[in-house]
Image 1 (cartoon, helix red, strand yellow):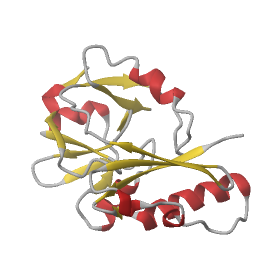
Image 2 (cartoon, helix red, strand yellow; image 1 turned 90 degrees about the vertical axis):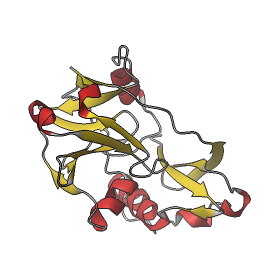
Image 3 (cartoon, one colour; image 1 turned 135 degrees about the vertical axis):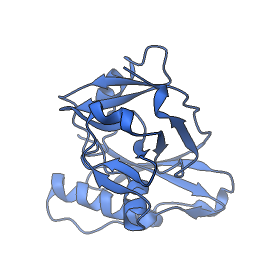
Length: 196
């Protein structure tokens, strides 16, 4: 059976961006299981028990299979290694992350990889990205995974979608990594720290 996950941030007894997780979970379920009634992540969670930032992993197929909670610390990222993987497809957040782990194995001396697909920047192995051009933050229009934090930032006008060729990386100043657990601005590094 193909399993999928939602990774959610719980902090101060609340679930962050629950409606965006609901949308992605139900879109995935419909893509794989047809017409199914919507599920709501908050029906399966007990956020009130967690005050520190906590990673909640909700595993599902047609229905929710299990819910797990883990303490969370942001992994420092100081350098990224560009890795070309035209064949990598992770449009659905699968529990099986082997394709991402295989790309991550090519990080060399860097802390993570920045994956290039068909000449365009996509994501790192664990986060969406945005690049600062001196005026605004751009995020790849074709990410590996459409993250919930990314959706929130687009909806609130904090970032703009555009195709970002790997060859144009030098025209940007900074890169930010973000995901459901890492808020926008918490992990930022100069573009000079992206290794070719």
